[in-house]
Image (cartoon, rainbow, N blue to C red):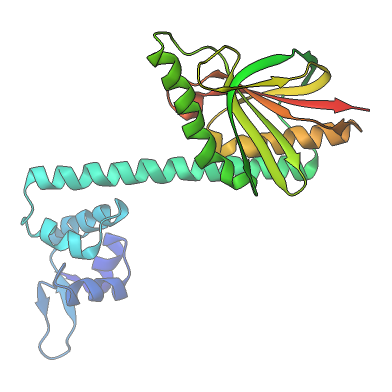
Length: 260
């Protein structure tokens, strides 16, 4: 038999943790000396401890692990638990990747660096069938503009056609408010018509990713414009070149008119 110290060393856990497992009934000592109270373990119990540690590393709680070690959970239930844990881990990894990308983007902004490729070009005049709205803060745009596009797309399909391509959005600051519109460069019955003037000079960039990150892309574009000593003005535009599949693969071109 192994003393608690030797057993803990071979199991890769602390003596304190072994005592905790014993109190919970997860890994009980094979023998306890009646005179000294010293705990002793059988070498074969190492397998149980390794299984316990492995399940903990998978994210299961000790309350969940107890029935697993006791064989009270059948194979199908155990598989379901593993599937749920896998899904949770994937979600956590995706969230960590997004947070890391945000950190790196903010560092680039602070240092004046960017991995984006900015292009200067002129913009054509557009005549849009559109919906428009006004909000007090940029964070309020998302819940409004999505249904606007859905309404525009549904109207085109109901008319017997396919949605025009690409879709457009424009934004214009009005004091403390923000006016914006969503539309298509085609005639759609029942929608107002709005015009965007041609622009002689604009700084543009292509952003690939979800709408949740497009604000950071605009921030990088704004930093670049400032570094050139240019003045942004007028309504800026978003051109949605590809919105098929998951948002992580969406392709949006950002257009910022400039002068100076």
